[in-house]
Amino acid sequence: MSLMGIDVGTTGCKVIAFNEQGESIAMAYAEYDAVRPQPGRAELDSRDVWKKICNCMHHVARQTARDPVTALAVTCLGEAATPVSKNREILGNSILNFDERGQEEAVEIEKTVGREKLFQRNGNILGHFYTAPKLMWLKKHEPQLYQNAHKFLLWEDFLSFMLGCDPVIDYSVANRTLLFDLEAKKWSDELASAMGLDLDKMAELRPSTEVLGEVAPALCDEIGLPRGVKVVTGGHDQCCNALGAGVIRTGMAIYGMGTFICITPVYDHLPDRPKMLASGLNIEHHVVANHYVSFLYNLTGGALLKWFRDQFGQLEKREANLKGIDPYDLLLADLPEDPTPLLVLPHFAVTGPPLFESRTKGVIMGLTLETDRRTVLKGLLEGVTYYFREGLELLEQAGVKVAEFRATGGGAKSPVWLQIKADILGTPLATVKVTEAGALGAALLAGIGTGVWRSPQEAVEAVVKVDRVFEPDARRHARYTEQFEKFRKVYPALKDLLASL
Image (cartoon, rainbow, N blue to C red):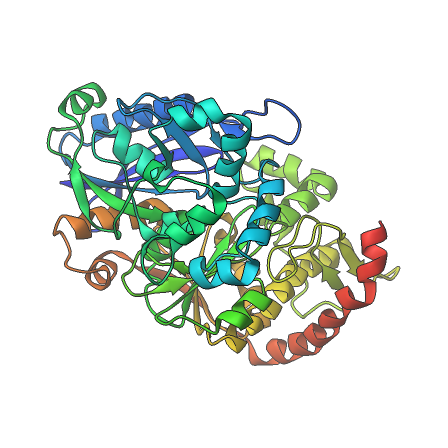
């Protein structure tokens, strides 16, 4: 037997089958591009994405004849919703979170609900990128589509619906709509009424690991799955990523090192909400019962390393192509061992919490005629980590302390970068053997829901294996702490000037 995890992202979908030992036995991936009907708009073609998911499932099904899939669950991006009819017809595309529509509606929400009250109920920082402002825009500008839609489904509940089950959404994905009551674990009539939205157009709410039914027999035959495959509630991508890396208890956090970096701490209590709101830090249900997560992120992240590679690493790119190796291995091979004297403000893209600042720019301070290219590269990696150290201190002030990180994503393949992070943060970073933690987390939910394991704790103990632990160096940590105190002063000193640029 095997368990299938379906991971639906912004730029591609991934379907992986895992055995009971957590080993990947079949995998398929498909990319898709955002549809941009006009400037400022960004959508996913829901019909195209559904087709590509089915193709990936078919590819994996063909490879698992000896270990047939018995259950599946979905992990997905948040916010983007697809309008569907009662008979499972796709009525339109799903609007992505960075689409500019909904900005005026977010202002309306602030007037009718208020940022503080919304945060108290829902746990998210008000913005136009959530589902509710997009639905308000549709109701105002495309009223016929809004009225005709039976449901507006996010990618988790969309897939359960298209696979033949009732549309059901778990708490973590529902939280991304702004319509979910965090403490009551139900849709909020109060919020929906203030926004003028109809809750009967949303999916049914259930916690993660609930069995919803089975994949429709005709679809099983078409895709190549055995009949009787159970569909289980999944979760938001960051939450499943945490589960797949074994981050299921208070004091642990995912350090997702991708194109953008996201730290996801886990905790078993609701923290100081005024302090969380003041720091721009959200609160969301984890896929593990009675636990919560927050997201500390920066859109610069790993993209800064890619920028350096593309602009200043042409020699390494050519050499890597000739040798058939990763150019990052060459770029990061001979970085200075000690902390650099540079201070890098990693505002090369829009920042995440606590600033949420778009009117800013990146800064590299401390350059001299003796500064070489590798010092600049290490300074960039240090600056991104200083940014997160500052955010982690805000989390701790609100009652959420991180004592252990699990690193995932492409950046987690770099021992050099992981050691820099451990040294700056003064906290161990561990890597795990299975790098596709999101899809594995979804597969674990499918297994828990169907009795393969009795709990997330049992599933993690059986499947998740730590590969390597990077311990902080005390001497370098002390040096980095001195530099970090200087880093704190950079943005306040330059804020007005950077905004003018």
